[in-house]
Length: 281
Image (tube, rainbow, N blue to C red; front, side, top):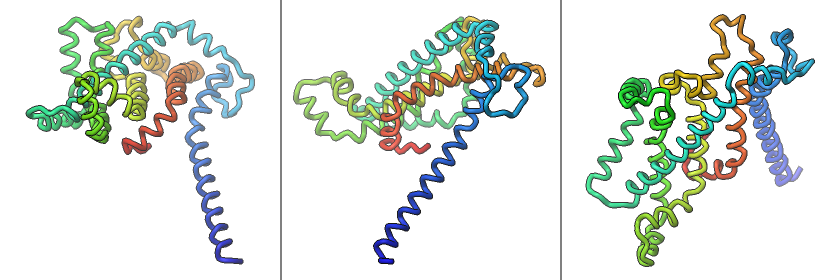
């Protein structure tokens, strides 16, 4: 066999092996989600059976889920808190990142270093002081208490600052020569150039706020302010044998679906942003 044919055959085999490994890894990662959806369709008497395809399949667990809990209110709470928190965090992070990356002012690097240092503090350390502040403001059982802590993120500021630093100075100088001020440069020049990073950050932030459990557990004590993760936790009884797992899995499906929809819409930008910012899954 010619050397070139051997080389092409070797590359073909290597490519086939890579695709096989990737497909197997994808299937392994999808199995828990498929099992969750399958269990949500099982009826109570068949819940402990190991059949992957439910027989009979029923949507009764979804109907009961919305009957025994105010799922509509919880969904609206989660959507409102997540959307406002995500938009607010992206906006504040972008403005602070622009100030750290493109504006020259005394003590900029020192302040940025101190700001980054807050990432080293475990969340469990700050949650009690945060709760005391919120309590003194009278915000317990209110939307401001659920949203305010999520508006600021040192990680988001760092990520966007790195993106702004990659933009050539000539673009900013050209905008200044055209009479643009900092607000115009920030909004019309800088933000459009970092769209992939913004999309990546939006997905990360959305997932983080949507899945938040500890902070809402502290400040949302009334059912009317509960989010989906809190509602999902109440479905699991203190005695495992009494837990209706088909209801728990139905609640998990309702909780996961918005994340999947957001990811599917932002998938292209998410991959671009991950490549540009160096984030690896």
